[in-house]
Image (cartoon, rainbow, N blue to C red; front, side, top):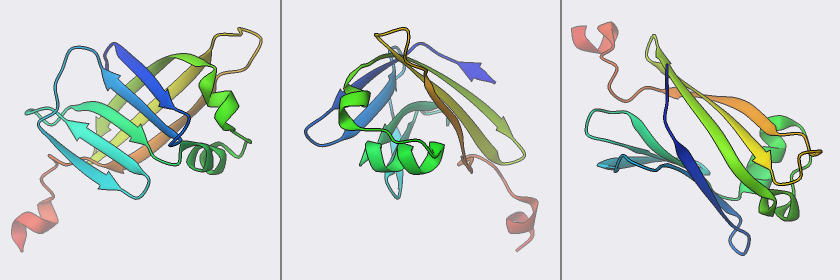
Length: 122
């Protein structure tokens, strides 16, 4: 598992939430529906973008997430675990107002640098 220093930006007009590594730079990216993933040359995740963030996060967490709510997010934590060909991306979004509960969940996606034994034999 790795955790880097991630920052975030929320664009309320376009409803996009962008979480990015402050140090590493992306070499390539992949779009999966409303999600954009960017990776460095070693295949490590360096940024994650939620397009139509309010709809996506509301559906993912089963809680109503509004633009006003996301505009109040000021910090985040992102942890990535790669195991058995999958990336488990756990995120936690923190608010300026400490009385608001963080938004948190885990995304599971295929690891791009995983060499499947099935496809190696084909």
